[in-house]
Image 1 (cartoon, one colour):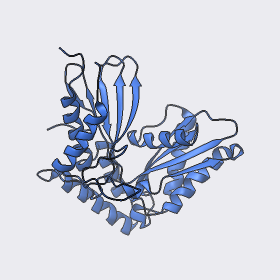
Image 2 (cartoon, helix red, strand yellow):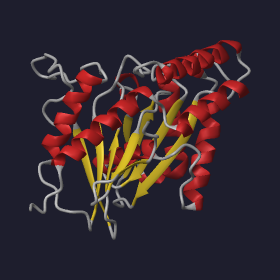
Image 3 (cartoon, rainbow, N blue to C red):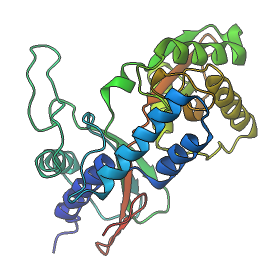
Image 4 (cartoon, helix red, strand yellow):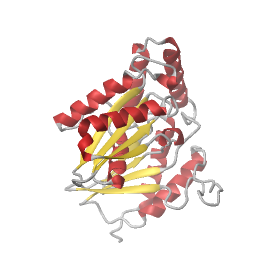
Length: 300
């Protein structure tokens, strides 16, 4: 008997995760959008929010469920491996197969284009795509996979700034708010804003994007960072950009998430990762006994 875990279970789970992510928002996101629609008083923005709510409701309740946005994103996976989980082999190829299968079965729009010579692969796979982020979970016996199909409109508004250390927290705040103001309605607000601070250029960007996986309303464990999240969320919503850039009192951002790494004395990197209102993510845990637990969605 092989001591390597059955990749067919991983592939089937990843296909389901992509289906969930494309067709059904996580409950924290759908609830936040509905609450925002109730609270918004600006008529054009309130109407846009109603369209958004109607849209994701119809997508979820259709038979079969339909993608809630025509841009079904470029495929990104976050794979967290419990240190006590059985040996796995060939997971990159397994997740590539899952992306190709989901493209046909859901279906999903093919979004993998060669940036040098052009041409769409037709199945959402290509060089380094899907992109897989790995991490390890001390003491855990499960494999956790998150499917994170990231849309192009919001991705185009992401940014990295190499600030001077003397600019400090006020400089970081200004950088983030300037990025949001410059983006305006282009990333399809209300947005989720992930901010990475410190480390190096690549570290800040990676930290910022990973924050888009955190549940809405969840604050950082560090009180100072939690306060900075709240301050930036308030400031961003005061810009008045509003849902789809139509103006609004409360509907520019759903949340702000921040993570930091210690930095070099000469550097202060700051990265802003932006997610559109279609904040798609789906997570599952796979256990050694082949049981699968869907964390963000309910399997029916």
